[in-house]
Length: 598
View 1 (tube, helix red, strand yellow):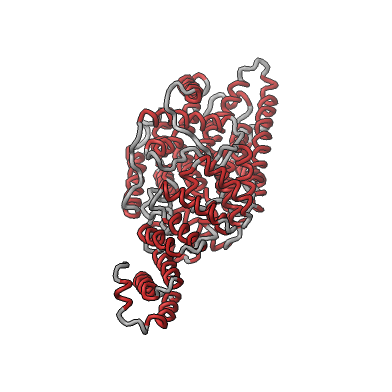
View 2 (cartoon, one colour; view 1 turned 60 degrees about the horizontal axis):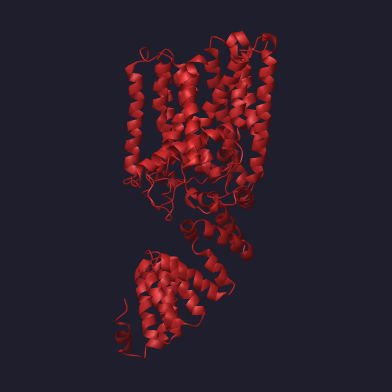
């Protein structure tokens, strides 16, 4: 009775609905969550999505091309992310629940595709009818994927729509391909189109042709598939790179550093990924992984053993189930792009090759593998009458554990404070969590609390701390602890002599200390380091210092310089009219006193 639904389209449709609804129900709690982390930059603080006329720009620039804060030549090209965000903004405005609903719907659609893919493999497994589990195995596979805690980041964090989107269209393309045993042109064309859309969500989708080729090799289909089918996917890949090349003219990837060290780190990273798929506890939005310097490192030895177990399972998988090699490839292939993050890492720059969202698609292969291994183990039991009950008991227990952990993770992602407070509690040495908490409390003007977290984050990682725009010094400045602020900015300037923020902030400390003349050299250096859009700000500060010193002609020249950079600045024009009252009777002095200043 339980095996009949998968044999009829009507029953399968009901099971699709069940999987979809289960996923929606599990993540319904996220509808009360707020924007978190990068969401604030991508959504509330972004006017890009307010005008549908700018949609074309999404296809002609990098993923961060809408913002001056990021390099338009960034190597990531994900226009479909912007398409979804335009639609979400049009439907929900800046209401967080609507954006969370979009993520839930994408994840639930992916859950249905996992069910259909699992059905395909189950229906083509000779032993499926022997166990009576042909219906229950695909359902549990889909529910494992839906509830797996490693996916909580991708679903709860709105900014992960590229991960959800590329997975959706890649899985759809893969499903259509494996269903196309007879080389039907319509199915092939639809699959290729889905693949192209997936690449426009995220570059990781480029692993699909390799997965399809390996699937055909494993299933002995290579000789039966027409050459034109393979060429279609190759053509879509070439088209993607042509579109990308037109939008992005440069790449930020530079290979340098110790290759041996990077290879060891790649092995360690892959082992950590495997461990988190198997035991999804102690999760965090920001993983820190150190480079491996020696094969004698105990963490590397453990990682090597883990990877060796994976390889042994891959080699011996034919004795378990013919499909296991495909499942293992579905785990491994989507992780490969993270290896490039490590290989292209430049010493002294920022690297984060380890993130739970990168395991979203690999968790599909892991879910398929888990249920398959449970089934194969139960098939070895002597009493066939109890196999189904044992299978249900084991899968239900795992599913309950997954759901419990996931629901707790949903609460963690409620807002920025809960997210980073939990992370800092679970990982006290996580510099990102401490700095993010400092940032949040700083924005809430709770400076005493922010100070504590900034100090700890600074001790853990100074290079990342300095990217927080010297906020510890700004806390001291706002609290009129000027000597401490001066010490903070001096330390920054000593390490990074051309740091604009430190130079500009130090000048204001000097101004508040009454040392106007000492402030000018810092403002001059800040002017040299400033980007063009910040120069008027510095020049206005220089003008203010000159005015207070009674050097009205120098002040006028600073305003003239500022006006050249920004002719439409009404505040500069107003100040210029005002200061001319003090310079109109000083004929000949302006040129003399201001001639040496640029």
